[in-house]
Image (tube, rainbow, N blue to C red; front, side, top):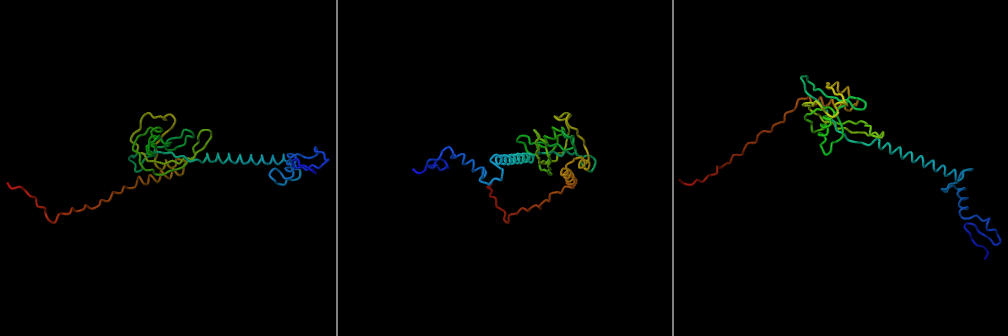
Length: 241
């Protein structure tokens, strides 16, 4: 036979087979010329340089994915419920109760997570008792909502959407769960709006005060409908005596 094939090299009769490159050597030489992905390599750039470039790009993509994941954790939205405690005194405007936060000691209103399967307004009233020890009648409808960033465990941050419910305070117990952790005070509506640092919450307090001070509209009574009198009286049969 004239010739026989071995790998990618062609062997002729009388030629030394040790000088013929094997299949992996031929592929290695091809990668050195074109790169691992079929691209032409620059002068002086071999397989090692191309591998280093690929590893660097993979590292950048991995860091980007982790940064996007952390940003998603930081912007995750959660729902909380807050109570706006108030009482009516001899003054025209009602007074509002504020409590301090446990972390930065800022003036806020009682708020927290939902308690089990309770309604939203009942969860707000429960938070008011735990943080300020107050009891009263809570409104069933929310007067507004605001957002703030809450620090969670392991350095995570969550954006909480807080729904506010008015609470007409009837009395305050001498002891409550977080008595030694927070301070409380009764202030006017204007002072409460200035004390809180959340601009949205300040607007909610002022708007609620305007609605509460407005005179309540009486429900319009519809005119009573006249009862239709029968045109002919029905004769009642009575048995003869």
